Length: 260
Length: 309
View 1: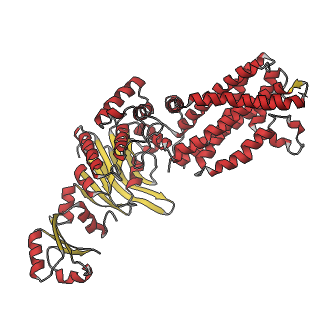
View 2 (view 1 turned 30 degrees about the vertical axis):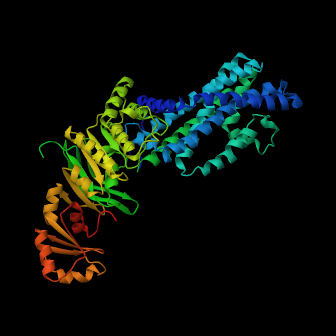
View 3 (view 1 turned 45 degrees about the vertical axis):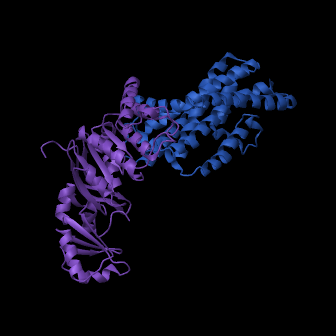
């Protein structure tokens, strides 16, 4: 039935981004504050507090070890958060996507415009986070400058399928399942707070499935100047494939919801 | 019709599974025309509008809008349409002006031009003094006017209005009709759906009456009334008596007698003469109303049902 192929034009995509940024202008102060406060609380409580008991992980002090993981997890959580309620809301309550649908804007533009917005939001948080953690002396390699790129990949890999999911459901209660069975387990077992090889061998592959683990390992390699467990191309390739599949799913879900 | 129609449909069909919403309709809308779809809920008006708006693809039949095919050139067509949907979808977190400027950007209109048009259109829909206010506190009529301004932001060739005044109070409806009438005078082509006969009579040059997905009659409001009704209608109420039982006693008065659950309608060229005949037969209605025929009567005659129940 997909007679109307999803086309994406930069003009329409940027118009969708512009709307998102116009809305963001109203709440950026509080949002920057929370993207500053949350990681600091994490680092102080777990990095300094728990780290005092843990000592070292693989020859690195615990705080330095979790910083890159928390960084990836910040991108991960923001991508999920901004693609659940806001996206469902623009279908169900605001009906902003229906308004766009009456214009030359195509479903693909809506997806890409919102993804660009997510990237901007994530990069702001990442920048704030890097400045703070650098002042704690936890970045040990100039390669840390590559972490914003890694976080962008993590954000895309997570945001696109989450958008598709939000476009496919009719009730926000489904998000509770997403948070409980995907978001929280990923954060707890995705190599953010302890190495994945501490997990039982049977469960380890589950952690490998999560984009967060690949992002955390790439970030860790960058901030510590070490080699990641898999080749860099494998980690990055996994994230790219995940993002690509997610975007294709989101295109399909948006088109399906907006056209009969 | 000398000019090429802006909208042309032949045998247009829309099916959802087993349900046929639009069942083979033909339409031609000429430039500058105000064209209406009149019918009760579920008649297929909104499904037809969604196909014209290029957000729903026809199941069968031919549809051309501005000479283009919605299946292949949907985005190009939508770029030249203005749409005022039945459900408001304004951005509640943007202010009144931003709702227009943001929407203008979807059409690729430059920022300065978008601001200029927003100013002009807010003036037109009498919301200039609310430009900086939030959308939420606006009344239903104001929101609908803002939606109409938004539909005009790309200077469209055709404006689609789906039930434009449903849910508005009478004063807000009249203000809206007046604005739409101004649009019509500027030569904008209007296509609207409504289940209000007075709206159709006020705004439409030509309309089609839809029922069950089909067109059951078409023409100007006046010609429809001339063809399917009498100039006048007498509404008789008989207190507690069942109207159905009275039909026999009223037979032969006027051209047609139609007993409804709560009243009897007598269709006649001369309402006063018909009323006199009712009294001459010794009947004593508790109330008598002689009025001109409306599209409601046309619809009742064509389908045996009232428009708004």
